[in-house]
Length: 90
Image (tube, rainbow, N blue to C red; front, side, top):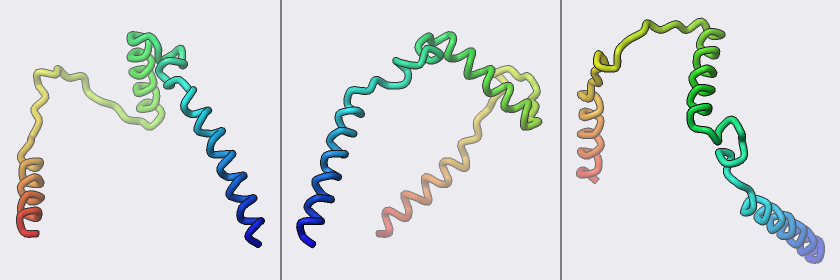
């Protein structure tokens, strides 16, 4: 029985080493995918993908100016205070 476990361990180790070599030699997707290499093309493709996905889902938005956007951080501050209180009570 012990020899069988040794064989399994050896086979797993061999597969892991081959997999590790493959992963180490791979380039990141942003370097190999022609649609991601060019920044302008990538941003345009991403915008088109979001727009078509929203269209398929039936999601519509009204055009707005970024100067009109206000972020409400009051809830974020409330959550942060609760976390700090929990940490201090431990």
